[in-house]
Amino acid sequence: MCPGCDIAPANPAVAQSGQPALAALVADAARTSLASDYEPDPEAEQPLYAARRKVYPQRVSGSYRRIKWAVLAVTLGIYYLLPFVRWDRGANAPSQAILIDFPSRRFYFFFIEIWPQEFYYLTGLLILAAMTLFLMNAIAGRLWCGYLCPQTVWTDLFQAIERWTEGDRREHLLRDRQPWTAERIARTGAKHFLWLMVAWWTGGAWVLYFADAPTLVRDLATFQAPQIAYVFIGLLTFTTYSLAGWMREQVCVYMCPWPRIQAALTDEHALNVTYRYDRGEPRASLKKAASLHAEGLPAGDCIDCLQCVHVCPTGVDIRDGPNLGCIQCGLCIDACDAVMKKIGRPARLIAYDTDVNIKRRRQGMTAFYRIIRARTVLYAVIIAAVGMVMSYALATRTNDAVSVLHDRNPLFVRLSDGALRNAYTVRILNKSLEKRTFAITVSGLTDADVDVIGGAGFADGKPLVEVGPDQSREVRVLVTEREPLAAKATIAVRFSIVPKGGGPVASAADHFFGP
Ligand code: SF4
Ligand code: SF4
Image 1: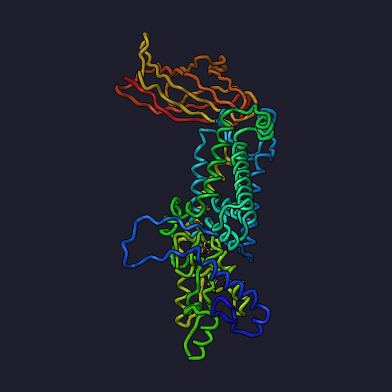
Image 2: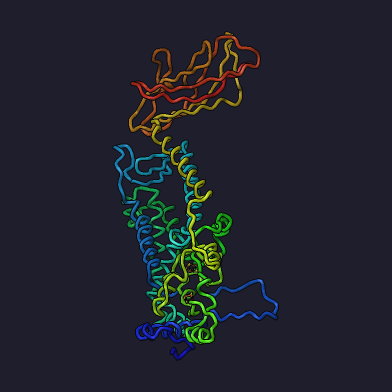
């Protein structure tokens, strides 16, 4: 029997080995329940403001905790190391695998180079990301929030540092109620120092995506880097330190819109971290459960030890049902499994499950899982379709492109010989890594001359334009039609750029306007 409560193990065999640990666990629950000592008086007028109750998440081990550690290591490893990965693009191009090159207005992603004119790729990527998020949500709830979201990952790391420096939940709770001693100051100081270091590395890694990483690291160390780099490192150090260190679960509960959107996108078949109340209720301590059983009354498997609440990084009691504050990290599953093991009862009192299954079990029916549903099929089809369109666009992407803009005013000019002239601004993109020459042709008119202001001469009567490697060039093009046009004529024309030496021809449409 635990001296601090009325809990006694049900199974004497298990009690033999598990009792001291269980007693400590339950005594801990009793002692640390002071963390949530707010008891609203139902008679009193309640203020609309509720002060934050600091959450002291307890260390836990188990399969979900291991998954979270693995995801944390992989995601942070990718984030911090990716800027140093090299990718050979030839002599005239940067060799950083992922680079957002603002001065040259390029985005490099391994073998893909996105120009500002190709921002539709980003739109496609955003659609893919949104649909993948929706699909994950339809299959297994807030997988993103619980495992992959940067706020979750960094908060997890900051909480691990906090436990390492200030002790686990009970120790930290007790220390927070003590006066400031040299030891407490040293531990708290160490925690904030480590937090700031991680935040600083986070900000430092971010700016490496915007310049050649090894060069920028050297420039930062020798204070030769551009001022804006130091500003952004400072800004991101501050945001990481305050969001992951101080605000933590408040970001998820109050600031993030995704839980609200997610709640509207889920359905009763989506797997969520669920307290199986069909099995757990009525909750009762081991001793109380034994006496209830002796009286022929039912008692559930939940012994009300509060371990699931104590490990929760957002301070949620999963037994209260679906909650906006629950990020579905699964740590309460690990905590409860450990308790169930100690008292000799089956694991997964808390598990990924659905309310539909709980209701079915209560009616004596078997549980069933429906991953293939209309919404999961729809999301998968959209992901496949967008993915295929993007892959096709990438596979058929040419090294050249052209865009045309007709002069707004005047729309046309009549020359002294009666011919009509329209003027255009033509931008030619040369995405290859060598200088190239293009001949400009215009189709759609009967007897037209094409001239380029500042062109590189003519070949076969067609004006030539030179464009440097990996550059774009804007030129003024004058199109003169000698054939008389009908009044208010608007003729569709097509501009083409023919690469000297052969290759695919890019073209763009516009109009030729008459009087
Ligand atoms: S659900 Fe499990 S961990 Fe939570 S109070 Fe009940 S027995 Fe304890
Ligand atoms: S209730 Fe459980 S799954 Fe939800 S946030 Fe807390 S520990 Fe994670």
